[in-house]
Amino acid sequence: MIVLGIVLFFITIVLSMLGKGGGEFFVPIFLAYGISYQQAASASLFILMVSGLIMMLVYNKKALIDWYTGTIMILSVASGSFLGGFISAKISVVLLKIIFSSLLLLSAFFISRKKKNLNIKFGPVLKRKCCDHEYDIPLIIVIPTVFIIGFIAGMVGISGGGLIVPLLIIIGNMPMRLAFATNSMMVLFSATTGFIGRGLSVGIDWKFNITMATFAALGSLIGSHFSTKVKTENLKKIFVYVILFAAVWMIIKIFI
Image 1 (cartoon, rainbow, N blue to C red):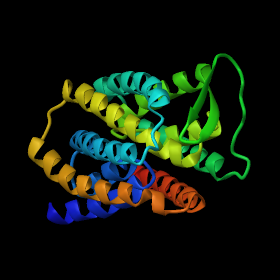
Image 2: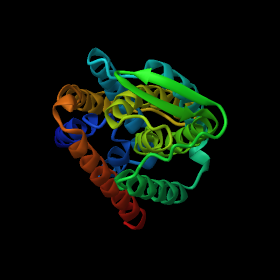
Image 3: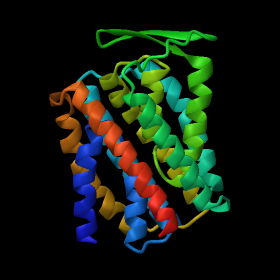
Image 4: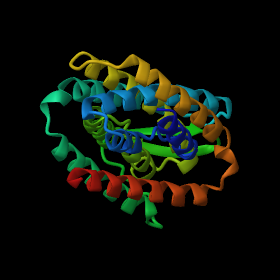
């Protein structure tokens, strides 16, 4: 168990620099370790709760979080995550992995494009000015999409940051560093509601969850602290590679 914890420690260092929880990696790693899917998903969400809280506190101290936008997104992603976590035991795991892996590949494609902002003005638009940046978020598109992402993420046992961050950047025109930081709020609340929803339908191994969360918490504290020391362009490259690796890894685990 200690070796598994050390692996999570190093993974969360890198992912917390990107404002990501890391559930895309936690679940496959736990499965490879011989842990059942339901327990793996439960532990993943619990870890995301802890690491999300730490990331949010550190990013807030650096004044990088758009609290207003994040709060609106939380209401959507948290409700979707709770519902997904609650009905997770009734959904085909293979189908969920295929869907989510496909969405990860799409997000990696769009975020890697040079011209990434779509400038969509359809419907009501949230005009924001935060952290010396101005951007517009089309609520009628972003809010329902975030709900769907939360729903799928809650079922699979992840936070959905791999899709929410590209959504905020591509559709919402939010600067990359702000999107990473603001997403830490959604990691916390999405994971919390998903964990509660899953806990109502399946059992929870508290000893395992707390042990793994402790290692992940240390990694999140270190990674989020050094996030502002990495150039935005480098963050973009790392983010794309992380998403691609997560998507391929999840697809491989379907057939192994």
